[in-house]
Image (cartoon, rainbow, N blue to C red; front, top):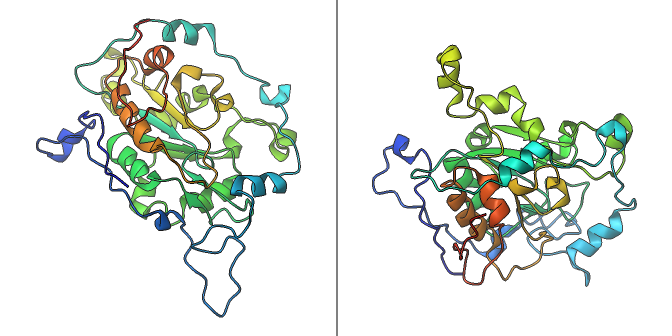
Length: 313
């Protein structure tokens, strides 16, 4: 698997670490056998159905097996859960403005999905056993070093904790550097909808209104120290990027979404996450990421992502 480089954007805040002539870091491609986080079972125990370090011994794909396990269809959320959201007029008006490049990259809030985006869970009742998407570990660690990261999954909290707490996904220090870890209990679902298989919507406005998330912005403390002399600096549509395999989950803020193909444990011909890495680097040099994404949405490209003839409006 070849090495691949980023677009060459200086990671935000690199100067704070004393880096000299720091170019965007290449990922280290790791062997496909390391994509499975479960070590082989001892010989005196019966191995699990997913075979430890081996794909499930079945003629059907992991996605097909998962679909057989899912018995209920996805249904829309009830009115008590907010129903099906639409972008606000104010949001659409701001995203419709012409985008402008920055001289220096800005801090970004990166909101990452788990299942289908960074990893695949062959068995929903075994959340700690999963397959990592190619380059997922390098991508996740790069985001943690360079930006501000929230994990947000529609899985139940105990399942999300099991995935994030896996030592094969993040080290304790890396987990501590996350801004927040949100699960199904952060979708404002009614009690009935929480227990049903409803379509979940990642309303970024919920993140932006959260005090803990807001306090993670690098300019938050400076603005607070200045009192009324400085406007509050918060995360908003200009500096937030949602990475998810579901376009529907990003329905309320569609121009902050990087939609990528669903990962179901299959081999990938395209280096999906490396291309997302380069696109995010490019977004960091935009005044408003929603304006740029609206005009130039993410698309996989043969040979790696690079800016094309960009639309200006």
